[in-house]
Length: 117
Image 1: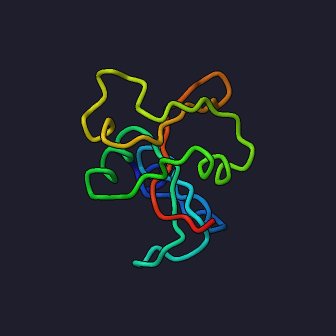
Image 2 (image 1 turned 60 degrees about the vertical axis):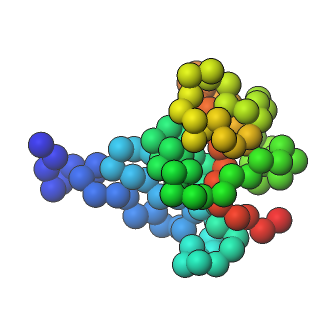
């Protein structure tokens, strides 16, 4: 059971509009402009959030050059196609996958949305 004083009981409210933390601890980075049907929003996602957003029709940034611009110098390994041969079909349908390191942990991610560059 999660107590009301537990920081994971509700999504964190960031001081800026750049990051949202979900109950599951996933971090979604979003540009500073509105999501309300307007362009210029994007998120770097993986796992269940990526699956849910792709299933709901979120657009993937599939161009390696645009991904590199958005990540602004972050070191990644570009895959294009999802590197796991057993990945769900919704992951296999898009080509913007890359692997990024966070300390000693690696995560396969994709950028979803419609960023303005």
